[in-house]
Image (cartoon, rainbow, N blue to C red; front, side, top):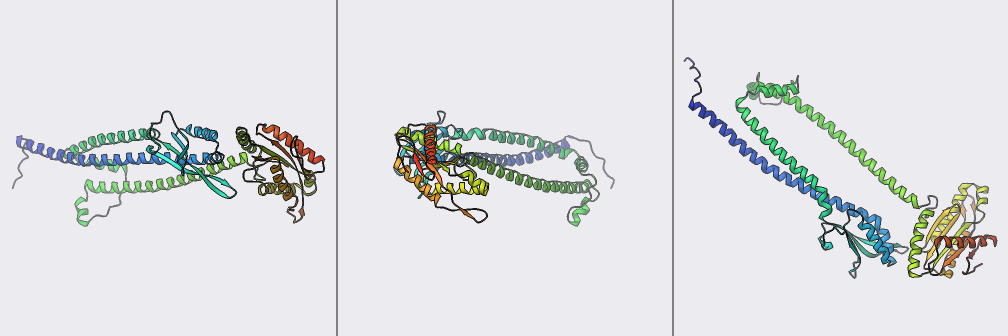
Length: 449
């Protein structure tokens, strides 16, 4: 039969074309509706993830500030120093993330301090979005004692500002993606009916020229697409996927290396910060407080003693003939003597006493709430323990050293630290002049041979 000529587009054919476009539009609208549902659900999941991540971050920051204030809070609660507690609470409330500070006794429910930022919502501490509670333990020679409980809390005002930008970005991206997908789907739905598939094939071949590796298809499928745009499109997409997979593996490898390097650098930085903090207040040879650390501790002790009118004693120690030890046995022997004196101070003093190396062979021991007789007893224990303890040198030889001590006392805690140090040094010089290896006291204090 002779092929009939293709008729011109009449009204019936135009109606068929219109119906075909209507079917495409209907499929497009249904597919896009499903996409919108999934996009909304995924956006809500991402928003929830951002919100809970922000809460976890704020909770971790609150827990981190526990390490800063716990020891000072324990000392203040142990001494029942309400003024110091209030000062520490005000210092904590100045931290941006902390909006509520509450310190109380969990046994009696007595609240010592409760402060909140003026901008914080006037709600109970239990209503805070994020709260971190921790027990306050005071470390002493017998172990540790729970003296109270502290709570650092943050409300939504601390969490929401952190996630507003992320949530806005997620919503904006979701809207942009929805609009982009609408335009892309619409364009492809129309172009798929009217335009030939060759344009898409040319674009794919331009992305991956020279691709020739066939994909795994059934024999009937290979015969059906042989010599057509689908064959070229198959090879082009195979090469493109292979290149994308190679780049993905390379990116994953580089990302892992970068994360490991960042984690290593972070750990090194944290360790360095901890070492610097310890070195700032600790003598590296004896592991006692250095002059800076001693002055910080002594200022707290003197302030507490002045408020309560309690006596405070200070004893200065100096190794007898220390230069002779260095000259005769070397500086390593001198270091071992200083370490031995530090050990005697640690073991013979009390838990509440503050021992420090002020420099060279000069040591100091501050004894809060201590009379002259009690301080003299502690100082004598230190002197006797050091005098009877042999110092083992690197060569295996044992030597012995003695120490002279000077005692000064502030009966009502009103004396300045410099005054006490000066009186203790005068008494120390008196002990040196009197023959060494003995304790002497400052003016108007107990005199001991």
